[in-house]
Length: 351
Image (tube, rainbow, N blue to C red; front, side, top):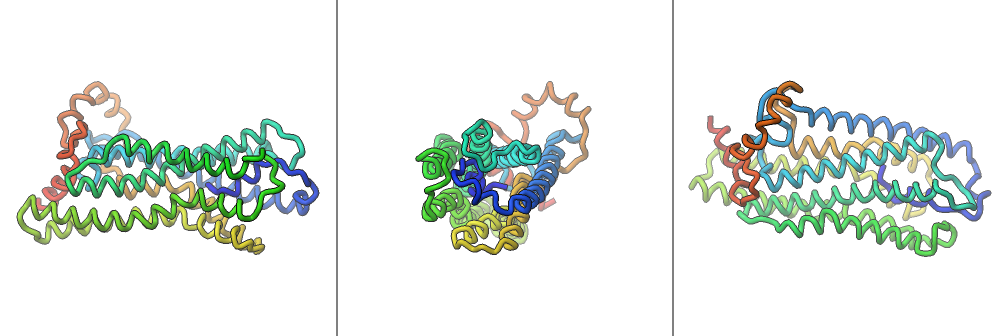
């Protein structure tokens, strides 16, 4: 799972005896947590790979079907970024868990070695990719609002928020924790609380901002449909209800994946010594954190509409570029093409 607590395991402890107390029990708990994390990471990664496999009906691929709502070219690019960053973050958790199972993760030691450096690097990568996914989810809400208002978010803004801001968040956390080296001794409770807040801030930002952005996007989409068709009948109402439902699913999937992390941070900052509660939350985190790529992919893209077919992929590879350029989904990034999923969905409803 993605937790700021893992950065503390990378530190070199000066007082070994304090951290070796109940060592066997701690190792057993860590092994259980690691096995659960590995299991759900593998499940999540395999499901995402399955969803990405080629299909036997052209144009029905998971990421290209024009009949789905709110998946125009610009939104589709953001969805891909959300899924890819979540996938890489989950892959990082799997790698870290495998190293822990092989007992090559650093333990309390007076000597800094390569294990401590690897620990820091792998945890930074995990946090970076998940932080990036949070910002891309915010960008999805902003882009949905812009699309509904027939506008387009500048590419530079997307890159800054999607790729640079996560680096700033991770860099701030590392600077706070390791500004005096990787010695754990001397870190105050305030510094630890600030570390949790830094890494949880983007999660809170999604939970606070996205509901408002989705609300205004829905209102703008309703106005756009009325303007385009000159009426608001049961068909248009059904489409708006579908948009509302999709936005609710996005928020529910995100909250499901990351609410345990918020609870875990509150427990740590409150200095609660209830070990059972901590273990329970960590196991829940091991189950739900790795599922983000699957949940996000399903609510943002939906299920593929045809069966897997590798032969059709090989047969159609040579004509992909020409077909895509003339398909219902226009990849030219023109603003008008973004509304096509709304229009095509509405036409399908009328049939």
